[in-house]
Length: 307
Ligand code: NDP
Image 1 (cartoon, helix red, strand yellow):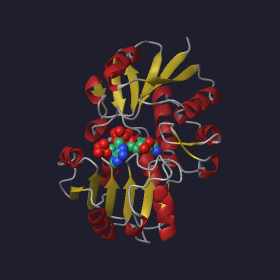
Image 2: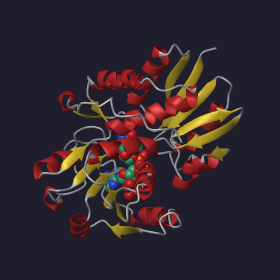
Image 3: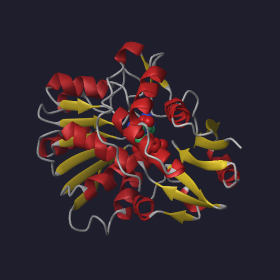
Image 4: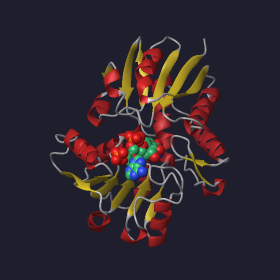
């Protein structure tokens, strides 16, 4: 019987995960099909019930369901529980287990961005959704001493800070209201900026005015094209990276969880590059820019471990 893996999100049309995961199944001769399920929030519970069936290896969960799916799951890994967001599902019989492979994916992207420099200790994070939770958790684990979170809706950032309260007891984790002047002041004290909002999917839009970006900053945008933020930051002299490595490595970790086998990283990286050839897309697949904007992948970077 052909096994099934589904991506549950809203929207999911044109997702790059499909090309990446299907290429990996085919390369290893695994009889499995990766499907895209566009399910609005009201249809999420029904989708999770369906994934309990014997024909499923598991699923990915994406925007906007990563937090919403948590109460629908039978068991969370310790890490997914600590984060409060899930992007990968596996089956134990009819029970569903929730994992978060965004964290190992983020770690590979962060290590690659920092390179041979010393790991910074202070960061500014933009956003408070499922992706931002994986980022903040990853930074706490990297022993950052100060993390300031800005979000359009401040209460969501405050909720996230409360969620991480105990884990962040030894350091300073704060939510602040989104004002350019406050962000500028915080960036002057930080070495790392992570954009975990969806602002930038439109290549003309940036979450920040170019003037507030200092030249010595490290900037990671989870969106995986050369966003306006990354272009402005590079022009200011900052070191920049997009979200493509994170996408690749969260996908590789999910593949290993479903199949019990190491992911064929080169195959997945090539499939991603080929899927992007027709246009640059967000992690969820929306077309966001011109084909020429594509950024080279570094498939040689070691894979993150599955949680
Ligand atoms: P969520 O829906 O959970 O969160 C979206 C975030 O973006 C929230 O902080 C939201 O703010 C903010 N936002 C959205 N639109 C606006 C706007 N117009 N103005 C200001 N803020 C806005 O999504 P995720 O956290 O799952 O994903 C966020 C981004 O990160 C997406 O672009 C996604 O593609 C990317 N991502 C990439 C990954 C990768 O592997 N490279 C992995 C995970 C995410 P508010 O709370 O105020 O609505």
